[in-house]
Length: 353
Ligand code: CUA
Image (tube, rainbow, N blue to C red; front, side, top):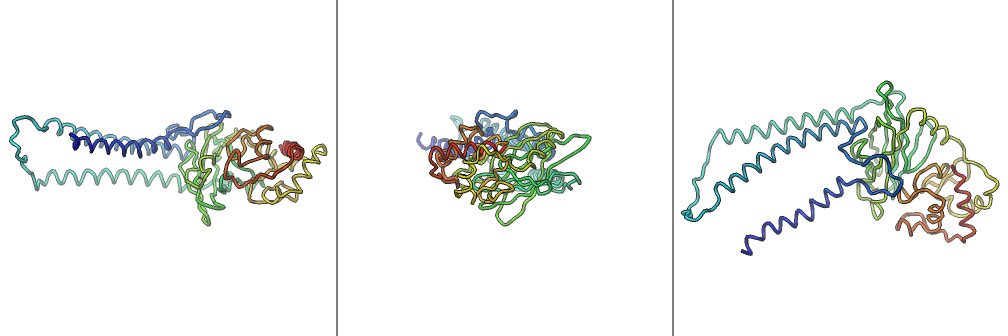
């Protein structure tokens, strides 16, 4: 009795240990706090050209695999039931069949054909996605992965931001895809916004490319999809797709120099006299650090800490006071500011709209 139970128990454990966490990680929507976007993150609801191509090929692959599973599992179930051990069996081996040309041909040729169909269909989808040529007015963006945030540059537009990739939607009358150059400042990361495109890694000393072409305005949530250290799970990414006119408005706002506000001079002085400026940049000032996010338009962003908390005054204060409390391991240290200094710095940062 004990013997018979061993196999299913072990199989069950394998299933529980591998398959369930795999499915959970792969298919569950990324957990997000209150500022929820308008959609779930599912590869089965594509809203961008590359994601659509991947979705279509995935349906074909799933259909073929489901058919194979049904045939194999059906025959197995039939055999197990039909030829099970019965009282009165003689206890001899059943007749052993070798050398049937028809059967051997069938189980060699049919899988070859299936694999061939899958190869051709997949190669075509890969070619469609990777071979796409950027149109002249495509948006060009460089995305640099950091532990644990995303640096985002628009070289042609002169914009630098973080964690939120703003792009125009593509309309059938005027397609406007965004082409991304992916790099890493430290370890391997992976750019994945399931509704927009497949995953592409960001690898140190290497340049990868991908593109997205959202067809509906909205906020699309993604996450780093390559384990990159302690806060890998909190390396969220937002792609905000704007109607064309709204995108131009966003670009114009981001191109503005930072606001000078005499009322927050005290906070300005604290910021520029501490090592904040070694890591952060604010355009047209002497703050030109490259290790942390550019703060020129900090308050235009929805979140802090790459999606960890909403970007509100209260959260900003908590973040500056002790980032390690909110995101342990983040490379921003506790600057040991006094309460007054903290209030002043936050008042200054709030002007960076
Ligand atoms: Cu970056 Cu995982």
